[in-house]
Image (cartoon, rainbow, N blue to C red):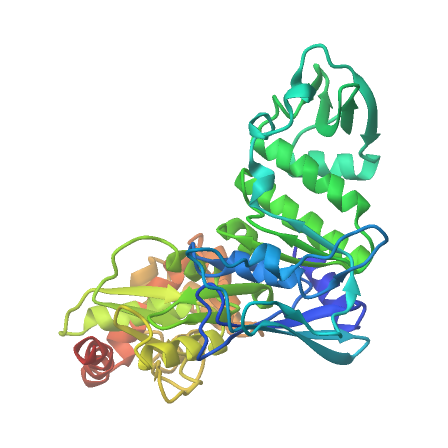
Length: 480
């Protein structure tokens, strides 16, 4: 999967994606603030938007659809009044949506707005093939109005459109099935189509397919027809699919995106979808007290924690990765001041810094503090002890101290464990140091690192430094 991501990234950096939607800025629409507009930037050709229900994922999907004129003869453009209509209960007015596009290195813009009672579309809205698959596609076929004649026993198949071998194979790959046939059929009594799949036991229609099969067949029917450089919008891409199918579907979307220059924007609630994408392809919509904040590059684990309905402890601690989290845990638990805390490994320095600012401004409904690695500083965040990444601080600190008690903790001779530790430190990637040692002594990376951070805290940190760090975290509870 990483190889495909790298190939998409290379194509994107080479400006091979045409008429690319770079940004959407939304003001005064469905929870997006009038006073402080929300801008969503698209930094990768295939992106996933995640957030709790009501955060604005579907609004972004539909706003993207109306950012273009529909290309192709006989195709109707998506209209803002259809998606965002005023009703007795919804006053849609004073809305403004600004779009930023990039094509061959040049940037352009367009505005769609509704100052009062009528929508007004800028005259520079570019043309593009747009495909929108909304949540209605997961409704069971036999529940849809108008399919009664298709389901009649007396109906006979009059014509069909076959799914090509490649896309039938891709469908089988995603769902882990060996399909001998995949087609869309019409009966002699209706012009509506119904999806048909074939396996070794025979054919079966969408009336008897699982929800995941029916929606995936419809999706791959769309993918086979999609034009180069189109915009594909998928609401709830993970709907009705098991984890393995979700991962495989993302892989196929990445591959198709690279081959045809297709931009894909999808919403999801699934960590499996997020894990298949690079950090720049993850967009988290996080509802705070006042507005929807957009956070880029957050870890799948943190994205899921923001939509999980669970009570918060006394304070939430944001850090870059699990290695930093284990070090923070070891320091706080060795101090005399005691409090209940929850650690979140949220991603890169920029993510931690953004969350630090939000917490400092009181945007979260719970106390929080952000902790950066020792080599990073920020006005609103704490920093770990040392002036380097956690692995370098711990390994080098213990080495400078002569590897105290290291053989006792690992149950390995001093000469053997010291050799493995020294060899690990010769690796250029410090993230690999604990894994290297673990492989040599048959321990997991987590156990090796946990052992080392607790040994470093007890042997290399002074009690004063330990108490001071824990107290700084605790002060954020008091201040809240």
